[in-house]
Image (cartoon, rainbow, N blue to C red; front, side, top):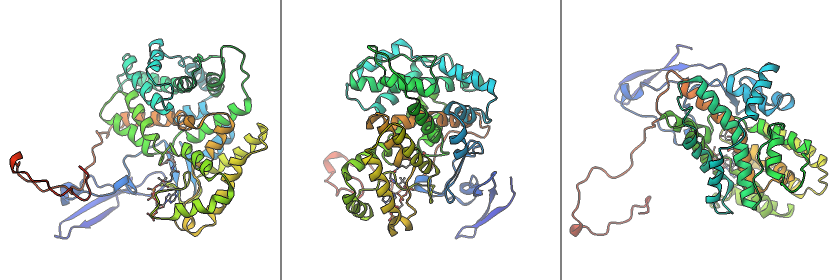
Length: 441
Ligand code: SDX
């Protein structure tokens, strides 16, 4: 750790030294832990645009150069040579597994895919048309009501079993949420199938006939899960870390992450992209929607564009775009209006000064929905698919947070802008006060 420091002098002349800390790569950080003690002020950074919340060994992003590393390995190399289960092992344990370790891990995951039968009865309580993300977050949260046997976060074996259960059972829960929405019977997992084959089986097989798994579909899903597996301190991962920092049940922390992912500014964008493309409908309407996206008075944004960190191409978007070509061709999709429209929209936007100046490029969500749709996965399941991939990243970060010897409960401070201290007013003396401009009662 470097011992440089920033010297900070307050307007009243008080002074403090803020140590600079260097990581393996990427920007240094200024440690402000003693700022309030020395100078009586907080830092202020809504949305944590320039604030590091922790140190982490898991994932590194270089937003300027479009670099994404999982435990040091470029995501492009993992996408080309690895599998989601192998990447899950890497993210959880820090190293690529040997063949024996990978086989053992894969077998463990295959044998944790079934749900407690009581949990299956939860699904009957949902409306048939409940959004699958609502079902996923609720049922994952309910896992904290089932698994009391492994909740000692200080026990490495308990942490391991938690990781295995989350990774293995989320596809079963996700598929059940989908079957619920179409009124079909749930399909039990099969231990003879790998992670993605099993998911396709549970999503699309029916008891009435055999189901043939399309290897192209399984391969496409596996690649999408690799690309979605982790992304350092994004909104949903930070939510998992914050919820877990209080010592809450880890299944509840993952459920909180699922809820945070659902937002259209985050993982919900893949569903929003398809809805946007359907609304655009035809290439002749692209300029109208691009104009709306540029209009500061119009809340419309080009979904699937822009990123807090990537100010150049999201490397995942590039890989998914290439995969679109392959999947659509292999699935025999010759009429690919949505994909063609997405490609045309990307070309128009990337030539527009507004998008160039604001460094707005397609992100991971822009093309992923094209592939899910080609695999006959409904739009409402797109963010669920994102959650399946990201479940291992959430779990790896929860584990890293739990074992961090410097860890403490997350509790940010604030800039208070409310009413100054004032005395209670008896009701008979109150008159209707002007509604405060920035707070509706
Ligand atoms: C994910 O953090 C992660 O790593 C997330 C993720 C992961 O793997 O976990 O990568 C997954 O969430 C990808 C992002 C998916 N969301 C979308 O595609 C929704 C559309 N994009 C935006 O809402 C936006 O770009 C964000 C939320 C992704 C990023 O927002 P920021 O960093 O807070 O940036 P901002 O909103 O301050 O935008 C900066 C400027 C603004 O204009 P000005 O106020 O400076 O004039 O760019 C504009 C914005 O209006 N802008 C857009 C835009 N995104 C930003 N204008 C039009 N269309 C857009 N999509």
